[in-house]
Length: 274
Ligand SMILES: [Zn+2]
Ligand SMILES: [Zn+2]
Image 1 (cartoon, rainbow, N blue to C red):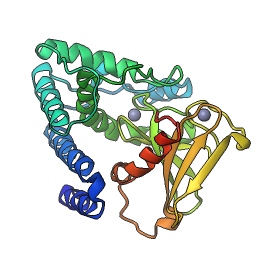
Image 2 (cartoon, rainbow, N blue to C red; image 1 turned 60 degrees about the vertical axis):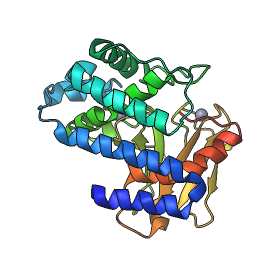
Image 3 (cartoon, rainbow, N blue to C red; image 1 turned 120 degrees about the vertical axis):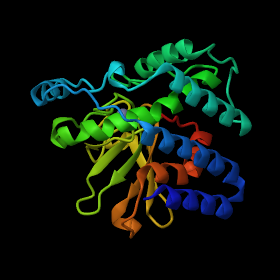
Image 4 (tube, rainbow, N blue to C red; image 1 turned 135 degrees about the horizontal axis):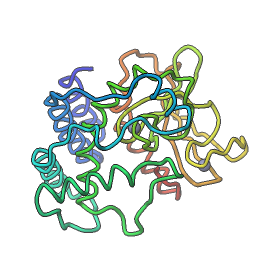
């Protein structure tokens, strides 16, 4: 889907659901910044050879390290600062408005968040008082760089090698799933870098339980979307079923935004996002 189409789709969503309009406008602005940044990257990704990649992945180690990202402190700080301002303009709830002082501090925070938000040893930490403005802006500013790297790494990864509950590229937790058109196989979508990877049909990617009695799903009225909730760990996962969607042109990162009402419903029932 082109970015013009995406802006139009978000503007339409804002019109259709006026109560969610501010959120859609916020996502639209963040999307623009994401695209501009990703398009402006001219670096090449330094990658290990195929055998080393395969070894890492078979041991459950994500493939991307922070050092591989083409981050330059000044431009990263400018992007993160702009995102922080956007978040403030839209009154997103944050716990602390203090921002890093200059590019070196932003860069250090980026490295810290890259490591902290890996779900490899269980789920990433959820701060009691919620994320600070600096953390949120940093996470969002990392996304175009992570997505850029993921596009280059994933062609070298066989889907059958992985099947874990966290992302094979960046180690992030999933926040969306897709059931594919032919077989209904389930793929997860990384909350950080938008990588898609194959996962089992039933089972919770957050706590790993396979116990069918612990996982419940609620279909939308038209059965296009599903909300899985896990009674073992209290996390939820949104999904789209392409067998029911009846359209080809589906962008999962966009579907993640269109289903923001499902997040609200799940959270109001006490279930947690990743
Ligand atoms: Zn990822
Ligand atoms: Zn669970």
